[in-house]
Image (cartoon, rainbow, N blue to C red; front, side, top):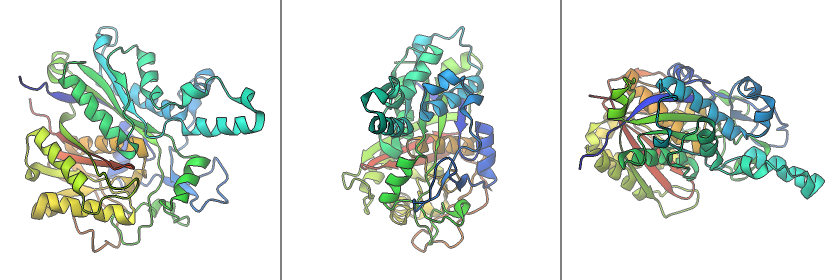
Length: 414
């Protein structure tokens, strides 16, 4: 039995480099940095005083006051991007069979802002101070739940949670749901809103983040020998996936096709990558098998590329092991150099960047790559976007706990 083909017919984004999908793309190809000083809380005692944030975000531009009070930012971002995605898809919601629309959208952390605020309320005012909306605002599955409720979609509805691999895992699972006939369409991706007192403090305690406070916009510098950690980011990336014949029958625009994926585990350490890269190699090889292609078919890799000393080298070495000499012919990049690390949204936002690279025939740059690390010697598309015809591209996303994903997309051919 032949596999059902799965295509992308709608996209939406809210990110530190653009608050819509077109603005996101324009921000990437122009090399825009989304990092800026944090101003909505006091960072005096924090080693890191900046993050990649949604610029000039006002929830009341998107939601009425009552609705905004009941939604953590992680749900707000997902709903904003989902609405753009549905509009972009051109789907007629009055005619579509909503039983056949799935919502598989994840978050790595969930409602971190709500959890922190309600913990403070409990400490100050006791149990009576805790809001009745605390649990529904905080739990990770509510991102998918809120989208389903708003538009009445009754297909598969859940989220996978796998730290910074979350977005890619959810896209892969949505792809599976369509292939297996559980639904014909799916809203999928990831969202995250971790820029808060507790989020910043937690990652600072791990010594995982850059402390380049004098120059936030240059702090995320994957593969540069002066890199000193990642930049915390926020936002959402959402796809509308559709079974090919369903999309063709309604005359939908098609951005590209999901070709396959690979999932694996390092089984090594809760935060550090496996220096031998065996789990990542397994994920990549499973992706090639799923897509029915060879490594040499890949033209572009959007790397996980977090700007951490160990992670960038480990991923580079793994790519060289998988691709051999051909690794140097691939246009790699790390869009985290611009968006920061958006955690559970990263796999989705970066898969969107990968899809648009295929669609537009252009690879966004890795910015701030001024002094290349000798151990990082691939073509990372440094500092300037590069025109390239792309047939197949891959996005890598890895998460604390040793979760690995490799998602392959291809140029659409009827």
